[in-house]
Length: 305
Figure 1 (cartoon, helix red, strand yellow):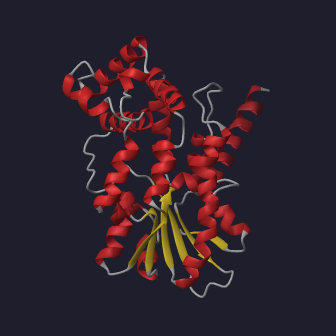
Figure 2 (cartoon, rainbow, N blue to C red):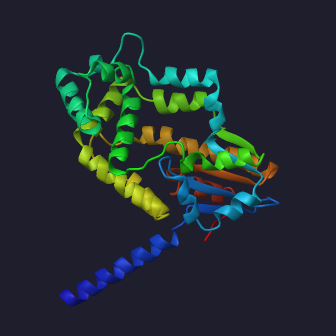
Figure 3 (cartoon, rainbow, N blue to C red):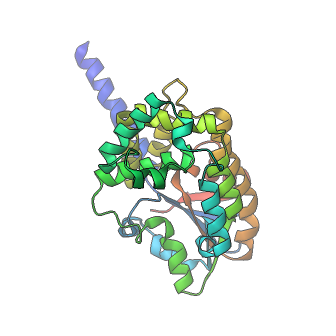
């Protein structure tokens, strides 16, 4: 009986491996539904290095075959003084409110332990306090995520990231670059989408469960670099079954409503010119992912291998 069970488990493992490998791509061709030329969509990860482009089959050909690039945001927008001011304002707490005023003394102690481990300094240092105390909890959580990544991945170069590569190349080639969202929208969703109390709760969830957060982040990174959207989706769907999980309405706001908005905009963009879309990989898979939404709208979606 043990031998039979072992064989069944091995067979199941092989089946799962086959299913995962069958979805092992980040680049997809979009055709049909009246398009005269195909467009493409690639799932990105904002901390992946530019060198990763060499690992994606068919990517160079897709870039050459398309006449414009669309990202979640037109990154050149961020360089305008007006939008930089909007972004900076969205990252800061209201006048008179600080992280140290939102957190209890005990919570601040726990946060400082985390900061000390990641930075070598904490908010008992006046310079660190000056830099971090005015940030919203959501922005501080994002900063901690970056620090966790930097601690585990030496050689990170913020000037050479996979996420912005496609728009940079398009600009160099004189191609049009566009965004599916505006700066104002992203500020509202990413920095102001939750109450301060909920932001504080999620910040402390990261501080108090850092080992789990790090392991989950590593699983997500591994799935991405394996070009495994099924794995990316599985990690995103992991739940702790407590207040640290994103609520359904928060997932809608951060992911699924945005997917639906993009799927409405993309047909007209593709009809105008063959387009390469470069958006976060987590937006692509699943029943409410961009790939499925486009397929439901009548487009043919094919993984590029």
